[in-house]
Image 1 (cartoon, helix red, strand yellow):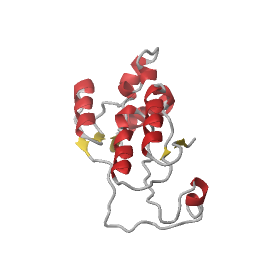
Image 2 (cartoon, rainbow, N blue to C red):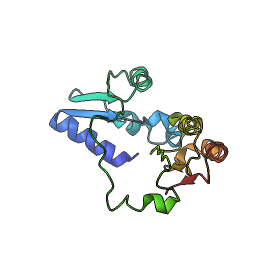
Image 3 (cartoon, rainbow, N blue to C red):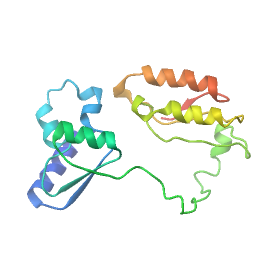
Length: 173
């Protein structure tokens, strides 16, 4: 998302040969804002760069396939997962008032999917999960809307959530 930073990192890695792991979540070709651009040469050079000291890591098989198809780069899959054997951190000064702020009762089930509200994230699956749990769930709390991908999916998710969860779907800035 930061072209000067991406170019600078590419140059540092190229000049120093520093071993690097590039952990990819989103690619430039997945962003509408870069579909027509005057900086395609920079984007193809650095997003992601094709340099020997870089080991590329993707989060799923689709990303791995796209990286290979579009850039000819191989990658290792390291999915975004949590280690559920580690106990949760508990309540801290930031979270102590979170339920009160959003009207979530102490015994309410609280589901949170911290992600951008964009189509490829499949937010409707989280909403459907909460609905199928069959409880009077608290208001949905979503992540930031991806402004460069339009508002159609965001609006559809807000409408879908208003039917399936108690209260109003809120989008945090």
